[in-house]
Length: 309
Image 1 (tube, rainbow, N blue to C red):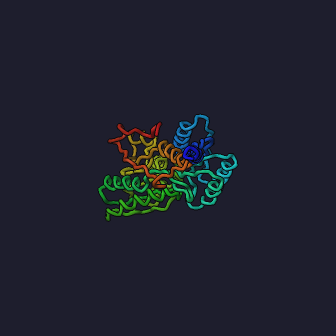
Image 2 (image 1 turned 60 degrees about the vertical axis):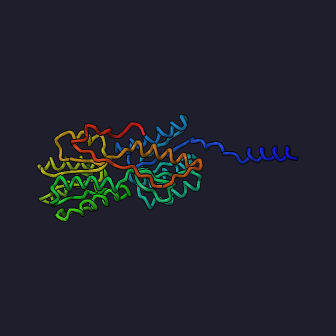
Image 3 (image 1 turned 90 degrees about the horizontal axis):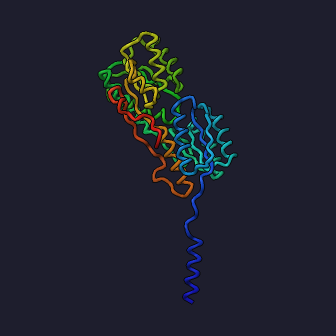
């Protein structure tokens, strides 16, 4: 009798033992614009982490160009391909919900990268509020705590909204700073920053500082100011991109950038997504990576956009 009970117990233990790990066979990545080096680094980080898990994984990368309907199509294509995991840099953090729900209903884990995506299993991003805050605190210090400042806005995704929020929190501590404009969209690009800055310089004869929501806009803004012969303007931004390292070492108006590590963001997103696939949910679905300020004085020791997580 005891022997039969022992054998039954062993059989039950075998049936109830840990399930084998779910294989990561295919990953879909949809990003803002592959014309921006930041998103290229995001793609590379996600692919590297996926291949570390499974060297034979199929990774499909798509550029949404900040177009919500294009992103919907890309997600539907990923569903049709039967991917296990989607990394999404949401064109619209709220409106993307319907597509995210379709993916999750198909058994796909969805992780937001760089910006939040409604309905996603988790999000990995820079602490953008902190990044905006340290960039604008430095800007305020460099202009002596007074003067006219521009906040050059961008596409209204959560990362940009949080950066502007952090910036305003820092500038609010300096009552002698006046924000002349905070609602112009620099499109997240060098060309957009150039056009927006040309407009500012035409409208406003006195500008002490400009905060741009990313480095491409900062570079475009610097170019516009130099074309129009405007000096004594301090420009700060967020990204810590390779181009900004060159700018900080040169003779430009750009004086600081709060760093990001896109490779590490997407690599961490893949690890978290793979864990969720196998029943391991993160303690907090919002994972924030802190930013550090890069200036002409510190750029020499700055590691840059790392080639590894």
